[in-house]
Image (tube, rainbow, N blue to C red):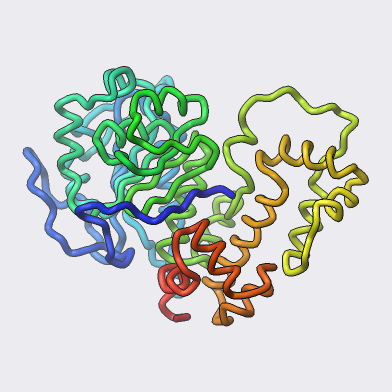
Length: 364
């Protein structure tokens, strides 16, 4: 499973509006210029670039959100603006700088703020404290805005107090340091991203793509997100979490992969499946298969099967009008009660609540 989606923790300005741009007046920001965003019907995204920003992570929001378009007329669904503490040149960790046109006024006008990773976090990384300019910038983010971090951009969110008492993730190589520096954050180092309602965090580098695709899916539904994934040539979902990317001793080359068993299982999620059946697909003993599966996927085969069934149930809830009991049978949960229990445990919501949130309005 690529996501830890938990019930949102109480926050004074938890957003409840639809993904379209909201009408709240932007907060007053010293030195703010004219309106940054010029398309009222689009969801406004501000990407906050700091010195040392990593160009790859910086480009993810524009590439993913910029590819999201209405199915009927192809109208862009998001408007993206790159900003910094002040307009001007921003150093990157590459051999070139970037020049941004906007300062913190973009944060005050945005519906979603994305904070990509930077290699020059200074006191944020060493002491967990924002500098005065950064405090002022985060204070400019208006109530109701959604805040997103990519990779170690989570350090900035945590230093701003946005992650206190909440689940979050960051790059696996920084997770121990992150947890020591911010003990009030509930760090999950194993997932690719965490959706906690109005605050979302991703693991390292390409996990930012997974998170941005998830946001598109959450805002506009599966069809739009799948169209973005096809256009950008990335998978709409990735299996497993960060565990599969942590360096481990290589498995013995004579052992076969568990890929065939996984593919076989995905075609039969509606049927009862046992470890013995999966192991037989790879001509392994159950013990060997169990060990090998965990090495490759980063979790047990039983947990993986449950998560694939949850994913299938999510897709059917989003894209069909099938009843809960029928979806439960198709996804392999057997009964609607069993599926409700698994969705509540995994996503923190009931099937009906999930469908109301994620299904495009035309299908409700």
